[in-house]
Image (tube, rainbow, N blue to C red; front, side, top):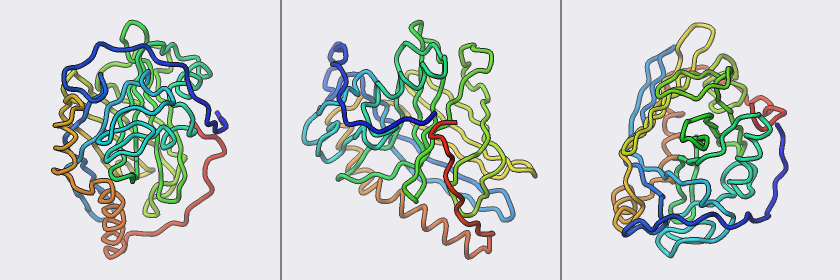
Length: 274
């Protein structure tokens, strides 16, 4: 489903009861780690500490929020900009429109799981949108992928029978988007997600014609977004988002030195969402 970019704003979102000490009520930080392992033709694995945001989509209303320490759609030491996601428009409207077009009854809360900008910069290899219905049942997950060539693609995951998604349920999608020059655009992904009130885990495995090729996971403990947790992220993970892109190129160099095959980048998919 191809959509066009827009700079319009959304209507105001309904207010939440204020969380004690929160910069933005309902928002959360996750502190944990990222793991990645390549299984063939050589073994190559790494892990690093990471932090991420969990943002309620009804708070993504196209407006400037927050303060100098953490802001939404504004300059701050740490920030989340809606232009970094989807089609660059109001995130809440984009997600709702996408789900309606797909016929998915996700009319409840939607949570964005993503890296923030730090000192104005972010590279977001993958972000997740967890979509629920009015009864709180998870109906869909949108996996938003960015590559280092400035391209973006979304995988819309839902039950083919229309049922709610269970915790840890395996979901599959064909790989159609170029991410790494060390992997062809072929095969499929296997996704599994676990979310509780205090912890979240997302796992993505890539299989090719010969079986499992890559395993990746992101996990973390959840806590409120407060001045204290913002400072913990800033001082505990200095220049984290710059480190994300640096690590990608460092790991690519190691794969090249191990003589893993290199593949040219193909044209991106003709549709933004698959």
